[in-house]
Amino acid sequence: MRVIFMGTPDFAVGTLEALIEAGHDVDLVVTQPDRAKGRGKSVAFSPVKETALAHGIRVYQPERLRNPECIEYLRVIQADIIVVAAYGQILPKEILTMPPFGCINVHASLLPKYRGAAPIQWAVINGEKTTGVTIMRMDEGLDTGDMIRQEEIELKPDETGGSLFERLSKVGAEACVRALADIGDGTASYTAQKHYLATKVGMIKKEHGRMDFKKSAVQLERLIRGLNPWPGTFTELNGRTIKIWKARVEAYDSYPAAPGTIIEVTRDAIHVATGDGVLVITEVQLQGKKRMACADFLRGYHINVGDILG
Image (cartoon, rainbow, N blue to C red; front, side):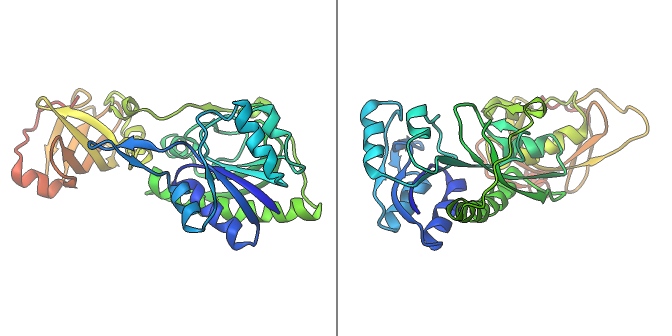
């Protein structure tokens, strides 16, 4: 098939490479405009742009897809289908109805659950046992289109947002190639979503990482894993911000202290009371310092039982 591919972050790279490897004619890659990043504000290409250029595919980076000149630019390509994976802009109706086989999206959840942004992180944060990828035919709604294919996977006990991101990227790439094969030979089936079962999730923001120790240790441990590597979870210790990168949960029989109170400091861990259970912190990053195991942190930083986090 002649394909226009739309995507921006690392998650979309696997799908682009899988389409190329499967022999599809990816005529154009559409990705978000280059942005200034880092302290030096140097301009950085998106991962999808870097991949497209490495394969000699032309790249188009409009600020807004809805602009008439953008729509006309895409129309001239005369693509058979448009494949979208984490692109970052909503497609207008003029583009959705443009190619003969429509537009399909690689979405990182088992729709209709987790429509919207950041379905990967929320699956970890909410303690889901399974998640997956849905290939759907796009319509004008937000992740509301008919489903073509779904692939389900189990979350690992130590799953992080980053590890699940990588796993679903591979699953999505394979599922997309299979879906295009079915669409091309006319065997694809299109199943309407049960909209009454839909759940919506919003974008992850830095403030989501602030730890509230009134929550249970289980909830906090999931938050730590779900927001790893970005934006990470954080709290305050003696007036300084400290990131929490890894922890485990322990139960207790009686309520030992107010939530956020450090109730024990061992050689390699900091034990903190929560609204339910004890959060045993094992990897941290103090403001201005590098990420390190608690054992290393505690050799250079004194913490007292009774100190309060948060």
